[in-house]
Each structure stands twice: as C-alpha cells, then as structure tokens.
Length: 72
Image (tube, rainbow, N blue to C red):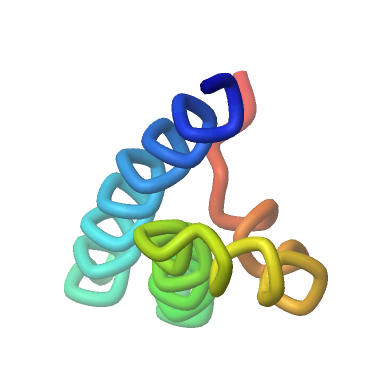
C-alpha cells in the first residue's frame, strides 16, 4: 500500500513540475532550458501513472526529475 501512495504523490509532483516547466518556458525572466528540464522531469514523474513503467524508467529519469524539483 505504501508503494501505491508514493506513486500517487509522484504523479501529483509530475503535474506540478510539468506546469511549472511550461510557465518557465513561456516567461522571459528565467532561462528556457530550466523550463525544458522541468517539462522532462514532469514527464518522468508522470511515468508513475503505470507503476511497472515508472519503476523501470526510474533510473534514467531521476536526474531531470530531481533537477526540476523545488528545494526550500
């Protein structure tokens, strides 16, 4: 049950990263490459919509997904 809960959380983070990446691409304040990384990261997290695909693609999608996260 814990794996399913974590996957649901990653999907919501994927939608957030995808939206944030799109907004960064559209803005003129930040470099567009950051927005593109955010979009790739969001797509990586959205791969957890199908758990088997998400777990299989986790190692190659971790670097752009982790770079798109906001650190406080």
